[in-house]
Length: 339
Image 1 (cartoon, rainbow, N blue to C red):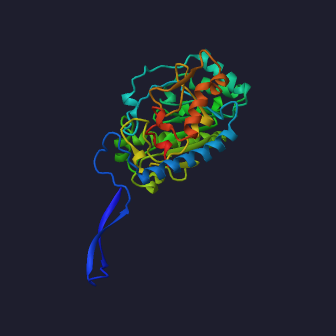
Image 2: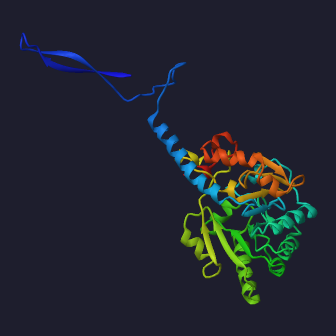
Image 3: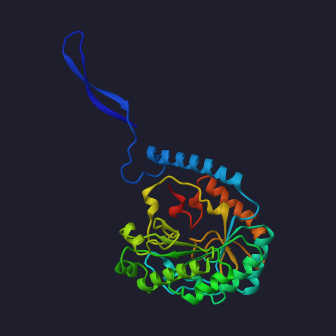
């Protein structure tokens, strides 16, 4: 494309200035929808694509070098039931059936984790683990098999004194409790169905029991949505071991599209580090896939080792390493796939 502009020059015979049209290349401009067959060049988009490819290639290459034959972390969804309807979570829209993992399947998963010296097992995914009546028994089995660190992520509403004692007696290593909002009103507006006073009291009682038992349980509070971090921390001041403040992310294709803030992609470490087993035994791509849309295997039919090293997993890692996350349904607009 060229741009026409007025210019002037001296006529040698008359000595007068005469106008002429000077033609020079200009930057391409996209106006409306391009016609069929028209080639449109968008410099900004090209730069983003290049940066995405470099970012994914370099970081994905490092992830590949660090890849182990068995996942670093195994996340086991013992149940996908939940007693809350948090506004920042799509659980209330989940279509897959609510269920609880079979004991025999759970034990087989833990046995394999122990066989491959997996140090990190999480007994949660897309539900409230304390709704699982066998959760303490499951913790005890994992610890007895030699799993180094067993963690659960809870909303804290069911964390009574009896449950706290039960979990510690079973050998739980770490618990993270979701606690959003800076005030009672904000907390209960975000975490529908839960009571601020109940959760705060449960956390304080958990800490008290832990300290009396002198048990090495790590107690963390995770906050993703608050108007004032300082006030959130004051609610549990000098109480828990650590506060973890994160950003509200989207849930693959669910509602919020934070990906619009950045068009530069990055590979997600989850496909190189974390293995997620749903309550029915299906191996989902990651914890954000709340419907289990991208299934890479079935632990009822194959081992974790086999699934982790299968063709499907390798294809997922390749797509992330080559900045082609848009080829994966749940990764296309996922916040975690962008800087």
